[in-house]
Length: 203
Ligand code: ADP
Image (cartoon, rainbow, N blue to C red):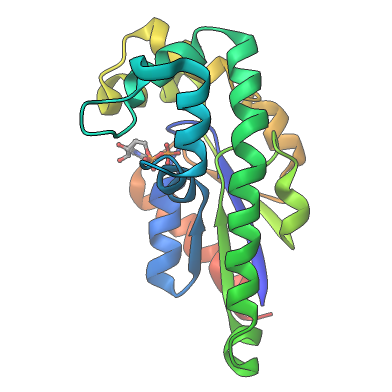
């Protein structure tokens, strides 16, 4: 088994890369999906939010009001810190369980498997130790802002707030083993992904 830690900055193109790697045959473990599941009613993260913020973050159908949570968490540095310290160990434990379950499969299958840990905050959380190598999907600050404005309907201020709450792309760049440049077209991005994949499967 080879474990790739795939990361990026918000709207850098990580999901696009992750989808392509899945199409090429990688097994994807998606930290956002894990987090999403743990935030469903009765999940460990749902419970933590309810205990901290009360009814204002819970919808009538018991689901989490994610917008209300985001407003609280991203508007205040100390809340963001609390959220990270609460959620990350819960997500990490699930992620490690999933890797263990995969490696417990039949020897041949497990040996050849390429597993991608798709983790937005891989470096911030210091989870790169869970992977054999790290790949960063890189783009510029201006492109991040533009993509957030068009994809998430954010205004410039909201977009910048989200981007600035993460480690800078330049710092991540200095930490990653391989950089996938996403400053050109989608086709160029996918070509880069295929290139890295071929190197890996030929090992
Ligand atoms: P992330 O998972 O890092 O947040 P996504 O893969 O979802 O990023 O990409 C963010 C947005 O930008 C998406 O709407 C995606 O389709 C678009 N996008 C990503 N890369 C490119 C590119 N090279 N050219 C044009 N649009 C792109």
